[in-house]
Amino acid sequence: MLDAVVVGAGPNGLTAAVELARRGFSVALFEAKDTVGGGARTEELTLPGFRHDPCSAAHPLAISSPAFRDLPLDRYGLEWLHPAIPMAHPFPDGTAAVLSRSVGETAASFGPRDAGTYRRLVEPFLPKWDTLVRDFMSLPLSALPRDPLTLARFGLTGLPPSTWLTRRFRDERAPTLFAGLVAHVMAPLNGLATGAVGLVFALAAHARGWPVARGGSQAISDALAAYLKDLGGAIHTDYEVKRLDDLPPARAYVFDTSPTALARIAGFGGHYANYRYGPGVFKIDYALDGPVPWTAPEARAAGTVQIGANSAEIGAALRAASREGRAPDSPFLITVQPGVIDPSRAPTGRQVFWAYGHVPNGWTGDLTDAMERQLERYAPGFRDRVLARATAGPPELAARNANYVGGDIATGAVSGLQALLRPKLSLFPYATPHPAVFICSSATPPGPGVHGMSGHNAAKAVWRRLRRT
Image (cartoon, rainbow, N blue to C red; front, top):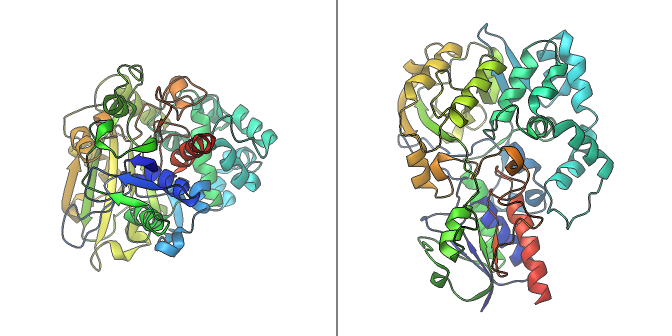
């Protein structure tokens, strides 16, 4: 009998398997697709030689992740590449605000009236970033904070809505960039703890950067898989699990799946019936004949570029997708251009480019024209650079990855109490009605993103149970 079986080979499932194998437990991992990766994959989606990331592409949380930093992933081929500017947010007038490694450069991009305000917001937390990120991403109730005072101060600053936090700025540039940061988790700007979301992304950029993985996001998953195999773990792909009886006997079962899929497989009935899924996304992967012709020079050097004229436009786009049940007229876009730092992603002189906008959960329309109108506002002539495009709306995204229910790449709405307590209102979020079954997906704390911490935290709960029994 195995000690543990893990279902789902996304970053959290892989991390959970690795953490258990590192502690001497026998582990087998089962994945429905023909390769590992989940939301961290790389594929040729458009033309030969153009290597795209179907979901995650830039990785501020991965490089800061306590779980990943404790693993020797560099030995297995993972190399982080840092663009000159982690993230830029261009404006219609041709200028841009930036999220730079330098707090000073970032503050200066907001203008003289808000530079000091931004410094006072982030500088108290930055020297303690490694301890802070470990504290707020760790397993609730079982890991005492290493710096409770800093964690409490961060909570007081970040728990209110981001719209409260940005009231301290006098001009629009900083609130616009900050609204874009919150939109990365598809949360409404006036939601609980959205201030913390924006702060986390800003601090991550200053402390560790917003890198891409050389060769694509698949490198993260491949490094985890290779390490797992070296630890003696087994990986089985092309293996779809429809019920627990499809799996070999084990002392514990760990699911990197959506809560509703787990309930269906394990026979939990309506245990997660109240779990809410959030907006979907419409994503386009482009093969370009050269760099994106951004008007703002800062955007040409940035790995990630946010597109939204101001915080009001970004907020309206989020409301349309999450509350009004319609696609926004002027969608907020998150874009990534790995070619600014990684020429291996496309043939010489060409580039891959990645963009998505928010749409209602399960939406079946086509957002291509609206997205490209937005891109043309900030990069005139963009359409002339397109060699090929691959589009994916919510149905296609859900077909590629079963965790993306209705196209929700966060595996659950990041709003209300569910932003903090997921997948249920429970002090033990990784436990389920069955004592030997656990959940470790992005539906559990600390939530969405390629960081492996949900898997790490769930593995901690699992190995404590295994040692007790």
